[in-house]
Amino acid sequence: MKLNLNIQPLSSWIKTGSEPLLIAGPCSAETEDQLVATAHLLAKTGKVSALRAGIWKPRTRPGEFEGIGSIGLEWLKRAKEETGLPTTVEVATGKHVEEALKAGVDILWVGARSTVNPFTVQEIADALKGVDIPVMVKNPVNPDLSLWIGALERINNAGITKLAAIHRGFSSYEKSPFRNEPMWDIAINLKTLAPELPLINDPSHISGNRDLIGYISQKALDLDMQGLMIESHIDPSVAWTDAKQQVTPAALAEIITHLTLRKPEIRNAELKDKLAELRTQIDKIDDLVIQKMAERMQIVEQIGNYKKANNVTILQVNRWDEILRKGVNYGKALKLSAEFTEKLLELIHAESIRKQTEIMNKSEAGQAAEKLTHA
Image (cartoon, rainbow, N blue to C red; front, side, top):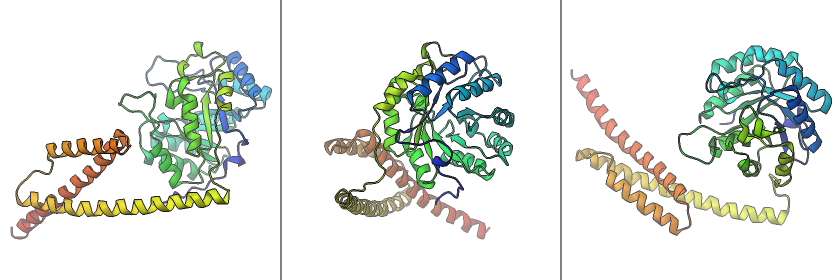
């Protein structure tokens, strides 16, 4: 089901061109000289569409640098006047919204720690009523698509039609080379539900490491995301926050130069016909896979009835281990990654368990209802 969002195209509120849309600037505004000097270097690259800077910094623990505060808005105003770059800041309260608007900030964004709290998002939305300003909404810290959608809807319901989403990855307990797991499937799901919603990637927060920014940026563009938000500092080695994930303006320009922009559609008739032919083959295989899954689940139901009749537990650990081991080895032989095969088998197994549990519970529920009837 598609989302019913009333939004304007990205090109109506920010400069877009042949380069990927790029929002860049320091993680935190630290000093006036640091911010203005960085802004000049970014503007000089000719690749930046808007200047970002953290003014209020919600941190995980107290005692860390939590932003320079409102004075930083004056520095942003100066940077804008001297470079011509529109500015954008994160807002986490209604008061932040009021101060940013008063200072002439051009674009606002709602951070991950705010998106996770509907009360906070609603406070921000209430402060935005009657205001015509672009707002970008980052995904929540945890992988929850509904929270992300809810935040976008609250802002949109306040009358904000210049709206975009920012994909900055999700926290995870699993070990990973990334600071925040990209979980691309969640971003793709959002794009599927709201195709008209601009989706901007934040490779800085996903990677947590400047060496991975180029890789993440290319991946995002290959998935047809409309732009990038990358943290850039005049001297990342002395940055007060998130030093490892920031790049110099020169390094940023180098990253952008080496990105490949691909078209979302093929216009060459011959290539389009070939792609259509290949997609038809995929559709046939997908239909066959679904058919075979349905046949498998019919057998699963028979097994569930047999287990119920003979008082056998639903989960047979040894049998599951055997399926997993054989399946992963077979997948490797067919050049499928072990991770993909394992996830696929886990999904199928979970549905098998659900079906067998349903059979068990349905029978027990019927017996309980019969006892109540005759009580």
